[in-house]
Length: 489
Image (cartoon, rainbow, N blue to C red; front, side, top):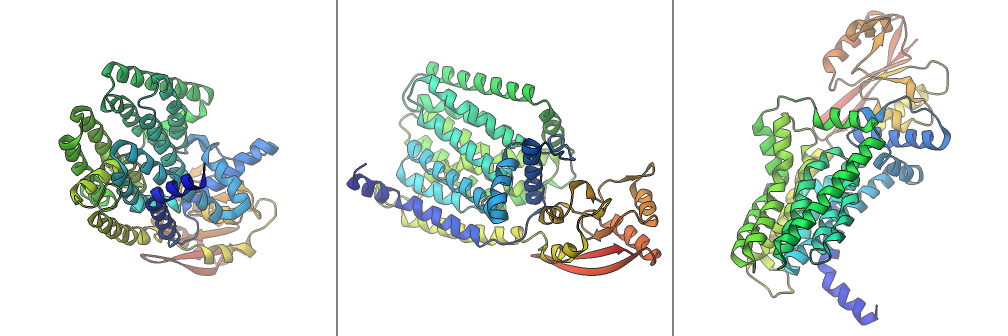
């Protein structure tokens, strides 16, 4: 590429670079210690690596309850964590999400032009779910990137030989293996593979062939993966297919969906209208825009069916990935200003306001879990090499991750389930406390608060057995959570 061509390319893409820079800055405004899921996946990745390299047992069956293949993202993130720590693993997520924003730009530009691409990248890149996933070392960022890549491939190759669509199949299967719930979005990519063909002026027969090829290849690769790794089926069924239902009200799920993705969904509806009025081939174009837009509701509908809002603030971002190009068209069309190569002032102003809104929404959510600095510092001198060490901690993923070099995985126990001398539940914990079975007990009165209070009473009832050595505060955006650390005498 000549210097002149490089200058032209940079000048053409400067709005994208500005959006990516803003995305990075807003993401790095979010700070906190490791989230429970981050600690779990990174720790599991290290255990999987030790199994692979040194045949060291994992002492766990991660595939049975993980919502994605434990040998994919967790291992990749653990490799980065080994070299750069938690911030490195989070930077990997940011890299994936920045890549997803760039792919949204490329997809929107090919479908709707440069103005729509600028707005689409801005809407997606600074949305609350995108910023949150950009600073979270979990499956989600990698999965969103892979879905964005698959969507771009089917759009980019719309006029190519139909066989080229097969390139998207392994990407889709890898996305679904990375996070099983992303299979919900595979039909949208297939629909895009079909509808982009007639929208480009080619025949519906060619479109049907393309969709059939992609469907068959994706299904075949998915079957091969499940056959080759049968242990994944249990995790898929437990975390996704037969996931336990909750009882949260629909109003709360709808409210959270509106806060975290409502604006983009509304603008995408405007984009569908714009397509119907302005597209050279309105029928396939409107169907395509409608398919991309309705995908923004998938996470809400699925979690409303389950009756839970757990992780909804992240899952909303999966649908926004598909709706953002149409929303970019909708806002740029509604603005009706500027030249073909300029960003309309009105659209730019809306994007800036939404960026501020997203930052306001995501900051308290990212600070919603306790700062574990004090807890880990208090526990560090109390744990260490030894035989038959046992640490009962309600949410043990956090200290287990930070203190991995000083402890073994089988030493950590939890208040979610415990069996002792043929007993389970509260009687098992009470008997173990009476026998001095635990070296340390850490209570934080979180999800198992009722049990924690019973355990506290049991610990206080035998002052000769355990003593309270520290009550450590953990700050959150909603208040302070206290870690009570009891040590066996």
